[in-house]
Amino acid sequence: MPESLRRDAFADPDRHVMEKAYARWAPLYDLVCGPIFESGRRAAAAAARRVGGRILEVGVGTGLSFSDYDHTTAVVGIDMSAPMVAKAQERLASGQFPHVESVMVMDATDLAFGDGAFDCVVAQFVITLVAEPERVLDECARVVRPGGEIILVNHLYSEKGVTAVLERLLARPARKMGLRPEFPFARLAAWAERHGAVALVERRPIKPLGVYTLVRFRRLLDARARAAA
Ligand SMILES: C[S@@+](CC[C@H](N)C(=O)[O-])C[C@H]1O[C@@H](n2cnc3c(N)ncnc32)[C@H](O)[C@@H]1O
Image (cartoon, rainbow, N blue to C red; front, side, top):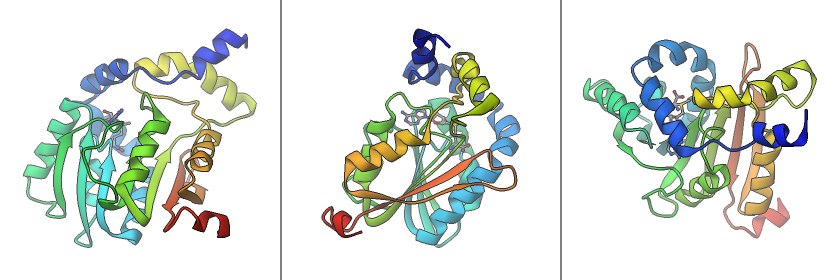
């Protein structure tokens, strides 16, 4: 693949393209993406329940994950897409999810929460789709308390073989649909290394197909602890 096409294939999504895509997705999202993303969503929520306490769901979408949490958690959801949040608010209004405190429109690049406000930050199928992934990760690390976790689940770039070629070829058309198949794990690892106050604690494929990867980072109790870790 020529270098210019390769660069284009790996470019980060445009925020407005994503906003338009999710305004189109909102009415159909639960029907189409609900079953497709279920295994990843459940695995991420199960990991978050193990941390417990106050949980921030970044890019909460239509709130499909609400039923994956319980009374041991207090969930706040944010998403930049007003039509997706409207769906989540409808779900919340059913009264079936007392453990969900609120859902609001907010851009993950600029979270309106104080430092260390949450025990856990979860982003399910989101980090590969944001316009500035490292800035969003910085924000996640800021609002999670020391000792708390950032839990991500995504399809990540396959790196090699026919699948990787296909993922690069599909990158441009996929972006218009609000999807991204070619985001490499190395970028998450490089962010953690640069950030300095988070440590990678888990990277595992999700059963049964291993198409999605769960990634957990822990906010270090003290940045200096990193040296000793
Ligand atoms: C694939 S959906 C995932 C929704 C939900 N987490 C789920 O698993 O069903 C991606 C979501 O990320 C949201 N999103 C993308 N960029 C965002 C940003 N900068 N801030 C907040 N949400 C964002 C989109 O609006 C969309 O709802």
